[in-house]
Amino acid sequence: MLLGTYTPKLDDKGRIILPAKFRAELAGGVVLTRGQEHCIYVFSAATFLQQLEKLRSAPLTSKQGREFQRFFLSGASEQEPDSQHRVTIPQVLRDYAGLDRELTVIGAGDRAEIWATEAWNTYYAEREEAFAATEEEVIPGLF
Image 1 (tube, helix red, strand yellow):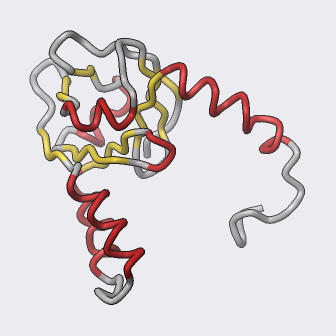
Image 2: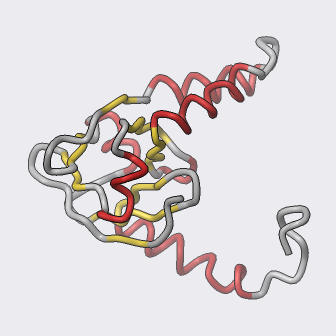
């Protein structure tokens, strides 16, 4: 499970060192791709295959499904972390997420998300109070 918040730096070659607490789960390979809210999703190879199976179940006649698949899969990059636990974020994904040197990486359970730190701070500040004030069941059966 991927949990927590980390602030690694993007190096000059577009690489990021995976947070130490994520390494065991991501050691078998990762897939980076476009995520919602202009972040980058980081899946273990196994979890990405599960997501891919779910995507394949969408009917080909669904325009929204086809569009989602195009964006989600066309930006995907399969990688093996190097001996220093680094992965390279392709330029197309860095551009999509507006990444510069300062990054925030959050664990989101079955995936990690890479954000430009400024974008994460803005997102967090705008939504923190709404989260704290949640009074209804947002995810059925959770709370």
